[in-house]
Image (cartoon, rainbow, N blue to C red; front, side):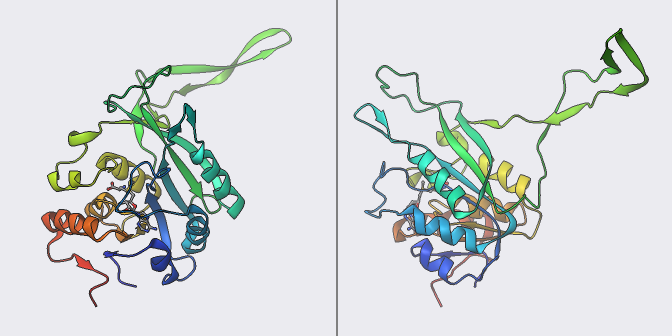
Length: 265
Ligand SMILES: C[S@@+](CC[C@H](N)C(=O)[O-])C[C@H]1O[C@@H](n2cnc3c(N)ncnc32)[C@H](O)[C@@H]1O
């Protein structure tokens, strides 16, 4: 298969070309509940999830960014159905993370609070083989004494410990959406991109340099751009030729010599 390439086709056709245990990570955002009509293409998640399991290496992860539509006042719950199907196929539901929007698009939510997040499920094939957590500084790193409560009261232990000065960040990630989520104006010709920083955070967490990252719903090419910038290899599928044109223009800004479309030869 051609690496660092976009396949202008149904992702099932792309994955049919991949051997078993081929990619290190998948990061993607499927079309949700036909919320948007992507050039008239619809998507059936079950065969795609099965293929994702086959092509992912043991220890690889899928980051699946998804939300639900509300129909007649009732949320569809499609995200949950998909998550449970991933488990049925053999994936671990490793972490249900949240992608929270600092500046959600204003909408009339009726008798509901303002909708401001999407699920960012992390499914793994076995235990994740790579984890480079994002850390944050603690407010203060204090020395503290260990103690044990016994029947006779508190017994201080002999050793003093130093509290760690850093900790892993929480699993709710806040990002700006809209025009501040990428500098690439051309990307916004696509109706539903995810923030570049989201892709940066997730790809750096779950892969090492030169690992292979796949996005089965490439959209405007966010995954390809970020993978390239982080020195990861990548493959993408995008069914719409119109969106492929956006990806090509976007990647040409960064990667003129290296970009090629897999369908050309
Ligand atoms: C939510 S968008 C992805 C946006 C992307 N994460 C970004 O940042 O630009 C989903 C994309 O999946 C594409 N798509 C839908 N069904 C597909 C399929 N079966 N195979 C490949 N692409 C598909 C749509 O055309 C759409 O561009």
